[in-house]
Length: 376
Image (cartoon, rainbow, N blue to C red; front, side, top):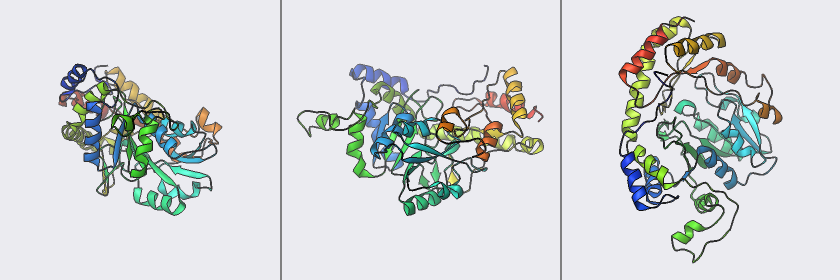
């Protein structure tokens, strides 16, 4: 493709830090660059503890372990999300309960949330779609009243805010993604953010295969051993070195992505209105993370033609999530077609435009021209 959907970005000292990691001869996890990333995330977000993981999926799995989810427990997740949001908890034997999303922000619809809570509900997992905050005041109020935990899937929302408060700081835990498609990346990686400090020590143990290895390296015990369940969730310090370079450039990354997002939004406004295409909605009380730019076409047929027409011009535009509730696995958990009508509708119509921090003005101009040439 002449213009890909996503492109790897190197905007700072990533290569220099990787060389330093190699020179340090410490490529396994929890080295110097891992500690730098932990400290920087804690400082920037104001969370009690940040722990790098091998993926956002693994961070979600850790949250399930920390909450001691048991077979038969229920976890409410939006149907319009990546499979990891449900799968991480299904691995513990929990049953995903699929919630529909709002037609404006495409976030979990808090107005339909309470009706899904039963005596078996243990957890609500809001996903901040496209980096726009869910209605966390309402979600947290419902969760508190009903005695249900909240884990924010913040894969899209790093550096976004809801009513002035950083996304990822509301739930007991939240998770981040540093996948190559995210604003800040190391190719593959994630983080667990811990907002309730009493979980911090056990999180370290679970992350280190169920051992107290971290306490050993801090000199708190004279040897380490198996003390709990866990798995291997520690990111290599080589990846952490790349990530540290990205995190140090977060202000420049966010500024560039905001400029790209604003240009798409302004330049496509008249065309979208004329063609019956919906643009993203960002409530006034949300400061978005500028993770993606999407359009909602009038129909599946229009979206299919749109993607094909752009592809013929060397531009890679893509659709997004398929509904989890009507998937093969979703139906095994009780999901059925028609249960989440908004999800089914937007899944058929949504298309994402090329969007990456190193996108040039010329590349974006080419995309804009191609989009405005399309007729629904």
